[in-house]
Image (tube, rainbow, N blue to C red; front, side):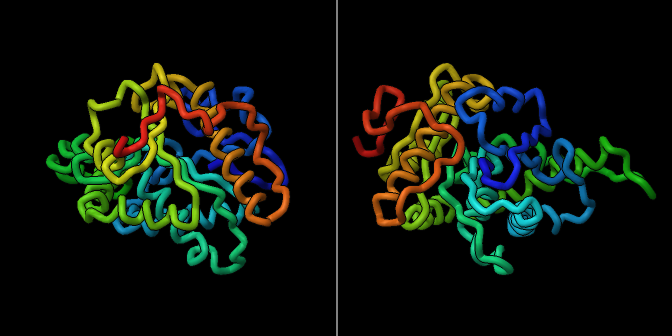
Length: 266
């Protein structure tokens, strides 16, 4: 999440992956980078129900509420894509206590769209649940259990076949942008073709693969900054008045398009 709150704090739970987020383009923002349950420094419950997309979305809303976040951009990557969609699509229902969470937009960064995106989970699911030691599982056992249950849940959600429909429905009232690493173009994900067939624009990060935020962090941040700037300018033009920009977007001019963008049906 790129969030607005009273104090700007960097949350880096996976430093090897995210330290480069502290570069210059979005240096005035608050980054909140939670791990999925069972991953990184997040808890690893032993009840499968805790790993459901709905439950994790509720936990994320609780975290945002406790951090006094009022405005944010959600950046959902890979298997976390459907979870980010759940957070954005149900922000009002999940935040019923205050109804004050303003989702500026969703950035879907090679997020899962269909069952084919879950091929990387197939082996994990096929092996079945790992054994948990009694009475106290080890951290390695808990991590393996978390990976297994997450794989099962992401496969379930992707098999439902309604992720793309929900993304397109969300875009009717909340901006949604799609990012792929240029090295993934036409190679890894059938969801890429599905998105293009439905007329969406995919922005490709040059010299980057699936982990585009790590492979080319400066371009990735510039792209995010340009999205935020475009969304907030559009909101101001709709009569909402001037809107303070989240962070300090000084990046790409999205009106020009370019060789790294590709719009479906063109």
